Image (tube, rainbow, N blue to C red; front, side, top):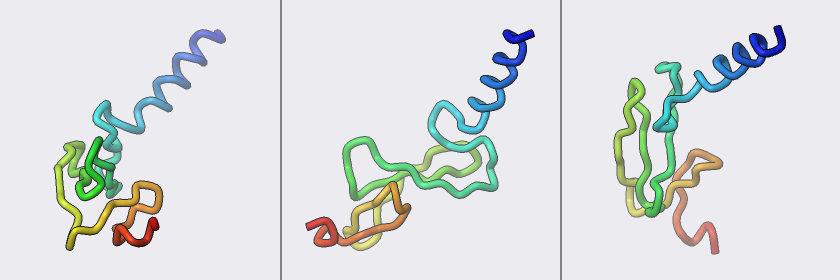
Length: 74
């Protein structure tokens, strides 16, 4: 019984995001950080990660989900 409950719990908690980091709920609009470049980010569109560049040379802040001027961090 405990193994079954654990299996159900793991299945429901891991099903919220796809392996690429995008949510399984396609109505959620999510931005993901680029692996190495702060001037780029990914936009999740129906489960697909689409690479985008930040507008006007800004940097993407993954915590706040906004774009900042680099001087914001200095």
